[in-house]
Amino acid sequence: MFSFLTLLLGACSASLEGSASELGGPSEFVLTTYDVPRGYESRVEDVLNRVFWLADEVPPLGRARQGAPGSVIVAAPASVQGDVKGVIERLNRLDPAVAEPRNVKLSYWMIGGTRADAVDTSALPAVIAPAMAEVAGQEVPMRYEVLFRESLLSLDGTRAQANGPEFQIEQLASVSPAGSIVAELGLSVQGGVETRTQLTLGAGQVLVLGQTAVGGNGGPPGSSDAIFYVVRPEPVAAQ
Image (cartoon, rainbow, N blue to C red):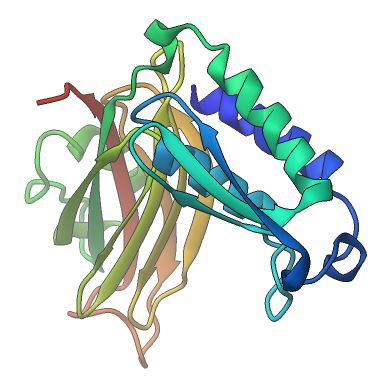
């Protein structure tokens, strides 16, 4: 379903061309309600709003909001509503078995590395230790420890966010028809480098996203010489 919506996003972007002034100002917006598969209201809302967005400080081409269960309300010029209608019609032709939404859980760790005489991953949880051991073999010897851990659970294809005093995590994750996890991730830590990436992973696969060297000023908490972002996704059965 995520793959299908990604294709819809590309199709919309190609057809909804032109500036906001060319397509009409807010006074020319038409309000239309569309039927969508139940459970996918927020997903369709997100895809349409991403298509409508043009740039910072520029009015969007339109606005989509969830309506009653099984519906999305779109405010946009009449010239845009035709493209939206085509997208919704294609969506409604999906096999209901494919369209069934699922939950997605992503677990995150920020790992701190401190220079040492030998590599030491003994303080890391078993679920991520092997992946970090591979990375450690390519770095100078360090002792590794978990600086923070967070998990986010969200509906397949919807956004989720977690904020703490020292970190921020954003995710948009979904399950492809083949069962892999497709995600857009944003990770940032106070005093560190923000990481934004798109990736595809098998359920339960562990990925070390990258390394940030820590300088003497403005680094993340503690006395780490480097930090590593680790992510592990998994689908979760509906409750």
